[in-house]
Length: 159
Ligand code: SME
Image 1 (cartoon, rainbow, N blue to C red):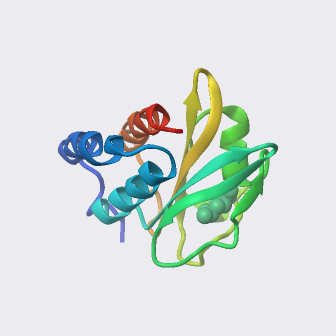
Image 2: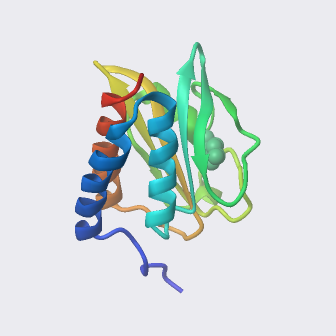
């Protein structure tokens, strides 16, 4: 079955960005990231697991997450995995089928696709949003556009 139901719509993206302004931007730092992952995971059914990693030296360190289970990958070297690749390249990565991507580091057996969106501050990557989907091809150019706008908001309240 082609997974098209329950995906993000343009209207929902607009509503969520407005909600983020009210809830997430009302806090700063880790508290804002905790609120952000909760809101994304609970609002969009295709966002099965949502995490934010922050850069610490040469590693990405898991700072906030929301989803059914914890991941063992709480520290990922920059350059490793889809997460490390996106951080190094400084650009969004969409993997429509993780089983076909040799960079993929497995966290959950249920994951079929993934999107990783860097968060930048004055041109430097400071962290990233990592979302795992339980459906193949769960993330479209709309998710990319939406999450890049979310990343800019997260950057505004980073510390
Ligand atoms: N799959 C990621 C690792 C992080 S887990 O998805 C939470 C990767 O390939 O970098």
